Amino acid sequence: MAALYVIIFILGLIVGSFVNVMICRIPEGRSIVSPPSACTGCGSRLTAIDLVPVLSYIFLRGKCRHCGERISPRYPLVELLTAVIFIVLFSKYGFTVPFFAYAYLIMLLIAVFFIDIDHRIIPNGLVLAGLAGGMLFFVYNCISPMPWIFGDSKWWTPLAGLLPGSGFLLLVAILGSLIYRTEDAMGMGDVKLMAPIGLFLGYKLCITALAASVLLGGLISMALMLFGIKKRKDTVAFGPFIVIGAFVTIMWGWELVQWFFSYMRF
Ligand SMILES: [Zn+2]
Image (cartoon, rainbow, N blue to C red; front, side, top):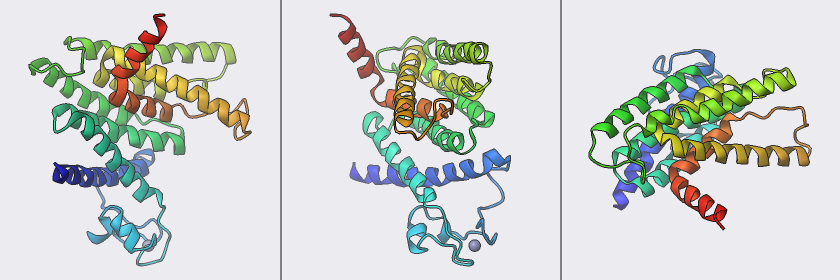
């Protein structure tokens, strides 16, 4: 069992280095498969040893071996983050199809998290990759005898999940543009991002993920304003909150739903 955890961790590191490639290249419109990675300073190709996640960064002490250009510590951090999230997912789902499905979704969402912070965009390519993976997962769930999203095994649950998150955010976007006469109230990227999340989670958990991200986004935005880091008119990227809300829901969604309704009942 311990060996399996080590394998999943290493898998997470390798996927994490691919996430780094997506974060760097997708916003620039470059291919994520070729050419091989190169130093941003001197352009020299990275060799097999340079591509070992995390360890190469430690051995090179965060510098390119050719020109000495500093390598951002975010590369190893994204690799570690991905690996840790894979371990957390694995601890809940084990060696199952849902584990691989959610690992795939989380891989895309980690890329979304950093790209939205850096560039304030959510690339359509990532949304489409999520929808394609979600459709595969949906087909698997239709032909698999195992109930999958725990406690909710109706076949149409994922399809119904396409609507509530995106629909709600679209409404916010339309109202925002009417009231504030600005396009910035809610980005269309956020609206689109909720669709693949709903497909993977089903409609009930999609609403849970949406509620979690709105709550988290509201609290963090208030804190940022309170401490003067952001002004009232500044906008905060909402994508990262959707990503965190989706991850929390994948891990503890039904517990959150139960807790909420037991709390509302008295
Ligand atoms: Zn270099």
